[in-house]
Image (cartoon, rainbow, N blue to C red; front, side, top):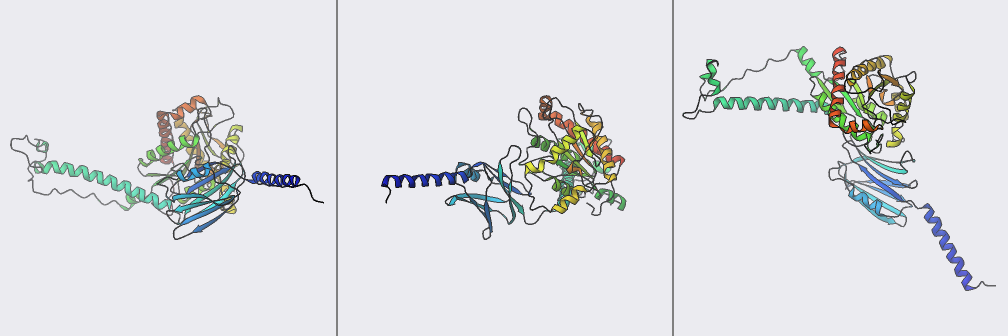
Length: 457
């Protein structure tokens, strides 16, 4: 017995619709694409409404990274990725996007240099949905200590050139022939040395060479105090957000850049940043960067939020291994320690044992020194405005756990407080905070000179 033709067609149509509905249920939609370029590495983030499955191929001649993403249709959001690559990106020359196969989108990332790529997926957290992340790292990691040395040499060369230019201009005025009838040169005053006033124009001016510094003086010159400045959050992790939208990651970077410049003007001192642009740095990597330059001090800069908007005032924190000194300090530490989840750490690429060892080490001496520098900084910040607490508080901040570096975390203000958010936007307040922190640091080192490091600058 055969079924009527109409019923067969209806059944076939129902199967097609059911298959289409099933396929649509598995299709993913891209909700946002972001590119975070930096000298250290560039990150590409694809945010979607479901977990993405992808395969990657790293090809050479020319260098490029090919990424095939399953269960995806090419749409406008993905096409936006092409325009988000900046011309000065150190790693990406361009991005091409196309529908490689039905339900497979292919990304081709053309590279400017060989890279060490990493790709990984992140579960939904905070305001983010599913994220697929591609990090492009240089094949050879730059030496940060060498960068500090070169920075120091450039600064000294610029200072020497400035002195030479000024001296040349002065000598030029002395040697320039006087026009007939022109008044005497200022150098030929009655009280000027006779040898200078009567020196012939053609005679070369002999400038006495500066005395060669003694070994002890040279040692003091070469032995810079290195301060690691850590602007909190960055990249995918905005940190706290104020009532009118000011992001913590932006304001603390602005303050950290000013603090670096202020400390670099201090004789015998040089500052480095754990990030100098808007990109994410994992907590353990911030600590590692400070240790790689053998920093004498680690200062993490924040502008956090609290559960209540009326919370106000600046704070300074040090590490604690015996519990937090207050419920607020414990809450703040938990919030800061969760930034790796928001920023997006590649757990597969990290050596879990190294991370655990690094972030579990602490010493009594380190905490003691951290409290000392914290008190100096807090005493200066008290002159700028309100303090949240009149003492240095302690909690288990992961970013303060370098075992051999005094480390403090400075909360410049509560960005969740409307009044303090306005202050954080104000350039004058930022300068006052920078001056207070810098003065506290200088006072600490004046009382506690650091020990010589193994590798002198």
